[in-house]
Image (cartoon, rainbow, N blue to C red; front, side, top):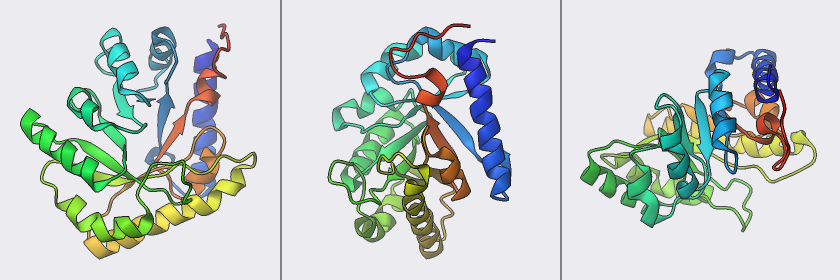
Length: 232
């Protein structure tokens, strides 16, 4: 068994255990293998090991990898999306995690209409208030959510956040709680369930699952530190 496949199995086992501990069905939580900067060979190995969804931060890297890998592989864009890359990425990705302004959502909707597509998206929320992070301010999202849900092409499926980096996973819990509470509030206000919560990464995904995450984004814990040489 290769190192990547062994790590995938370990991550899945930890995800299942975290869900069961929280009284959740493990089938409710999906895994996005974050493959940014990873080789096509590493991605193919993970795909052959049963991993279906891969997340890329940069459109250029995603577009370079996608034609070299099986068509059944599903791509998520998890990084910031620039306006001039929308047209290129929409036909390729299954889900965009980082829609962080109403202007970007409107641009996606307009271009999607031109392409005949109905893109699935998540709204990125900066629940920590960090100036270095992209994302809606929660109050701004409350004000603009009606407009966002009314866009005819964009399919808003939920929310996404990135917790501040910390050594201790528990430090992230309040931010996951805030995102889930905001989702629940919006769902009641708009009568739209917004079932997807993308939160949790290699260092804190078990805490995120405990707080309701339905998609965790894991890279290092699967592929190792960048530059690490993996052997079977």
